Length: 348
Image (cartoon, rainbow, N blue to C red):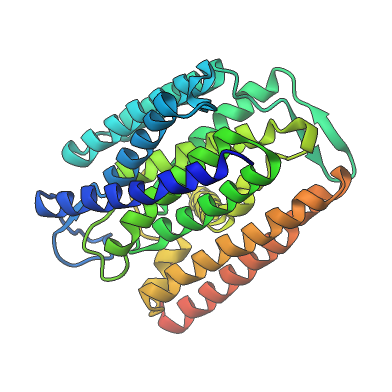
């Protein structure tokens, strides 16, 4: 792909820009004070996700002004990027002022509606034993649910040093490779710029973290990966399915969905803050923080391998590639539950 080399060259300084921004956020911090749900024990700066956001914006502006292939010039992508930046602005304000969840949800929904209005909508899915199914009007509702759900799943999972940052970095590198293979310039560029941003952020977030990404980073990353998944599903000629990004984020999505369902069945208020995600229970049961994070990086690498296999499969077999990822998550869940029992922990 002709765009690959200049995009790679542009990504290198973007990582440095992200790192410099993160260092500035450490020097002039927004402090996250620990509470009974926290994994940290002393006030720690947050809002480090501003580094990846800033790097992404600069990368897109550079493409728009300097590159002849400039995918940002397409109206649907321009609106998408502006909506993502606006949502990140609300999230950064939330890092400072701690808004109610409904405020964040409305900002996410507004950004999702802009993406949908710009034409990023799921139109079909490939189902086992059925094949491709045209979604029609249901595609709009499913796209809205996916974007908001993925944004919040990534946000909810950002509670342990290095976990989400590492997963996002792996997922973005894999998605960039897939974009290059399939000829999707916007998917390639956006994924590379996100990867560069998180490459600059992650060294400051490895345990013991010097800074957290905050909502500005986790919501922005979750939203962008969600819409990139929809964009990738639009590579119709190459039969690239919507399942690629869920494969890459399988660990985050499983934990978020499992925890939400478990709490709902237990009669808990799912909107209340808690510390009973699987990754939190593993850490509370004595699994080292770095090992928990590394396990999730491993799930992302597994998803990347499965996504590449996925590209080579015929359409009727593509949905089956999720099975190894589901088995890995089931095994992780059982292992965490065993560790909990040995440590005498309950879900509360």
